[in-house]
Amino acid sequence: MNPPEPGPSPNQGWTHREQIGLDGAGRTVLAHLAVRFPRADAETWARRIAEGQVHLDGAPALPEQRLHAGQSLAWARPPWIEPEVPLCTAVLYEDEDLLAVAKPDGLPTMPGGGVFLEHTLLALVRRRAPEASPMHRLGRSTTGIVLFARTAAARRVVQEAFRAHHLRKVYRALCAGHPPQDSFDIAAPIGDVPHPLLGRIHGANPEGRASLSHVRVLERRQDCALVEVEIETGRPHQIRIHLAFAGHPLLGDPLYGPDGSPLPGTTALPGDPGYQLHALRLELVHPRTGQPLSIFCAPPPILRRQKEETGPGRES
Image (cartoon, rainbow, N blue to C red; front, side, top):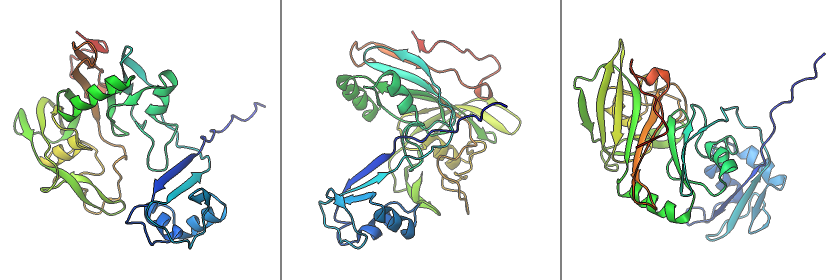
């Protein structure tokens, strides 16, 4: 008889730290944690406090202690088993300043949600380059290029390029239906909108931040269209929101409906899968040499045209 296969290993745990602000002053420790981390109920937080997982100003906290602005609250979360994800990536470009990698579908870019810590692209990249800092992020189900800076100087230059919109970012996607035009712009502002579980998420909002996407139709298929989208701004979920706002949501998107807001009655979360979106090309000026740099990541088969070039990771 073969020995049983070993099960998944827990991570190393994590300590959440925060400095109490004016909004938390006056609350009890128990009430504050229940508000800050609503996925756990008050009974769960009371148990965690009793087990000594929560500290206030370095000492074990009591559930009914009143908080004051400026105090330090820490929750030492014990190790937990994270969901299985594809723990793989490929290097598209690398030098002493920058590292660009290909993110697979299902792998979170960064820790978040109280679920993922070590099962992230950031953790994978830092095994190769511990100094690497992500310059942007992709949604969990979005594939393609993620750029990391390897020095403080490179990070400052690239951050400024992102802020000033001095980079070119091109994506490939499948959207529902057939847009009437072969190319068009979407400029719907993006801001907070209601969500039944999370309270607020990003969506199309007339009072939101200015946002601009350029869309080009590559192919019209039976019930959808293959499009390339170049974004001048980088708002969270911008392509999903903008194409939905234009009446052509990403095919299979469980969250965003035709007005760029959550579908009525949906319980879907921003990280839920179902759509096809790929970061295809990133063009920028190299932070040290000043030379143009173009990074390319071949799309998955479903997002390729009939005669699709796969190409190298870096293009001249």
